[in-house]
Length: 217
Image 1: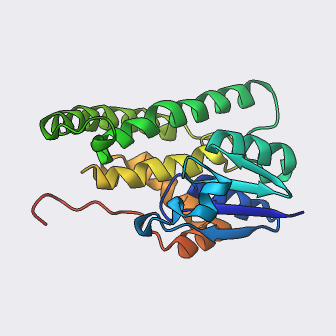
Image 2: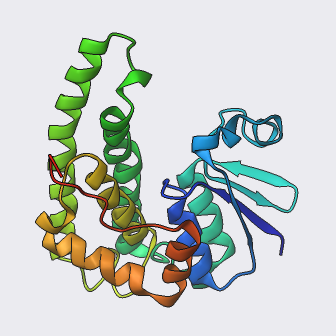
């Protein structure tokens, strides 16, 4: 098996990174430093012309987009528990995963990078302010899911949902949201990060779970 994952520390690539480590499969983690512009290098753009992470290389095949990567790994590594295997549990988990990816994730992009949507500075401030309120509400929805977790978001086994929830909550710190204000979700994220395999990923990416700083701190 030849698997290579290109990830950026703290980015959404944490999700497949964590799931690969949890699977026990052999893979080569390769860091892409976004702040240094490595995603715009000729070598990286040859893999993903969009210059985004994550990228999974499986043998000679290049796979982009986080959901596609997770579904590919789920089929290849069924022991990883990336998603429930079948039935309504799988259907509901897929629904939540898609929502995290197509709604919660891009809402944070509007908070963190409003310049991607307009070059008008006043409009950027308005976009960020509006998206910040929306992001708080979306994290509240994930908090409600965490309250009902049994004990993980997809059931008895940690899954991609828990990895994505940790990532989205962590980003909330950059959006002026104290993660401890969402106690069930914060507890879930800490439990997930404490799993030995996930702890290796947290250490490899040098992640601080709580990046929130109160205004004026």
